[in-house]
Length: 468
Image 1 (cartoon, one colour):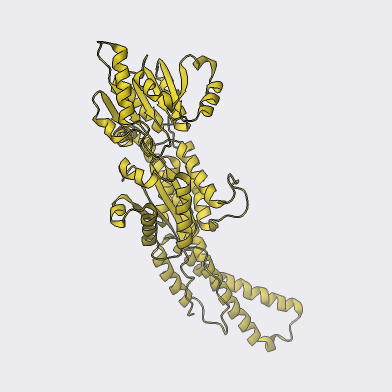
Image 2 (tube, rainbow, N blue to C red):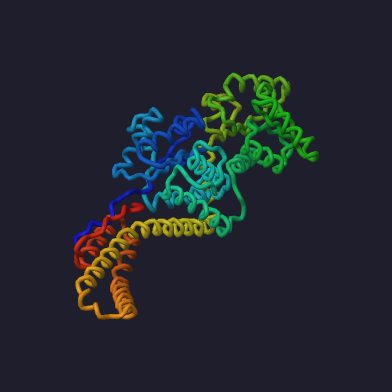
């Protein structure tokens, strides 16, 4: 039988950068301008030139996942990222990683489960992955439910994200993480280690988002005498102040950014986590704070000021590092502490990583099995055409049979066909274990050798998916 197997119609691609391969200064250039609008523009560009896409943008990573039918999709994706970022490909390429097929699916599961995070095992990224998926599914319908029929992603990419999120949830349940770390938690731990203890120390947090509020809570738990939470919006400050539990009211105060110099002057630690596009803590502000600090202490020695910047783009201007009496840690500086924490939890993380690989392999195999389905259908249609042709050929010799006897002949030929087709059908489905190129070659051989060509081959149906 001379039948070409179903055509290649797509693969999963992932390209991106993160704290693993890119210093914070480069992440600022990629992540720091434009926020959600920039991510939407990138999604639109990828969708127009490659196919359905999801863009995941957090403070520590920018990743694009897409399903494409283009064989040069990886090169095109790098070109799109270069054009979008304004960085020449030669400058951008060393800071990018590319994944295809099962490796891309495995990477997505690891990211969603928090296994690839700066704070390994943190749970916030799962919500960020889900939000990115939902935004891409329904780009014109904010907050759309995952159960709403219809999606801009197509069944392949939509299914990959659905299964990855399900797998990440299962990994978090079964991975036996004894605690849920976060970047804010690592920042507080680094502050405590640098100063010996936070017990009784005045502290401040710049930024009242989820990370800033988490930092405030953890500073209080660590024993800070008081925490000042600064935010640009007076309205938000007032709202948060009204929602503060009574037992914390005497240890927390709120202020706007106008009070930053005075707050720095009265604090030993500042943890900064805003979404500002430009530095908020400038050399001039720090110099003013240090002058106020010296004035308040008279002839007494001035304690060092510790600034921990967990924002991207960075909140603390790079020149602040050169000011005497100030110590600055950014996300790159915190990475070593994260690595030590991950080493201490290696057994649990290894179990979680094995679950991630198992889950990614399972749903990638399902996609490959679906890729074999059109060829299985072709095989059956081909055999059915042969069966019907043979029955027509001997119709004259069956003229004397009763309707019941004709039905028995029909059933007999069906049964024989099913039994004969069972081995090649299973062989076609078994190609799901192979790489796409090898699988396609195997299926071509199976289709060519299984049954003789019928008088007229039925029209082929298109392939569903064939991941790399």
